[in-house]
Length: 175
Image (cartoon, rainbow, N blue to C red; front, side, top):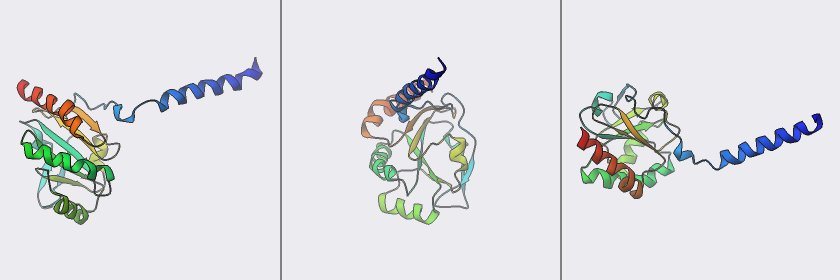
């Protein structure tokens, strides 16, 4: 029996690895869903003498989009965010994550700025508090400042139409 133990352990590890590889990382549940948005106060990207805090999310349904200039997927989703902002259905706030201020300001100047404002999280501490795995990530925050949904990866037209817009509409009717 002892001589089969390494084979049994190897087979168990192989099965666990196989199961793990089939999991979709975009389906990782956030422990923050249903909880108050983590408190923060950060300087604004464009006007560092001013700041934004979690109080900005209270009283209306909002999106918080975590983005960076070095993020290829952020560029891919930017047109979708701009189209969403142009609908006027929801305010989108940006959290510029681990970036250079001047590069981020130029990026928004070149590609357009869908954000009401962007907070500047140079060292990523606020992103860590929010459970950010990487960029982009987008949070739906209700009128009371509770996180109701998280999108890991770029927001697409399909995600907007099938997940975010119906949820935002439902939250607005409840509020």
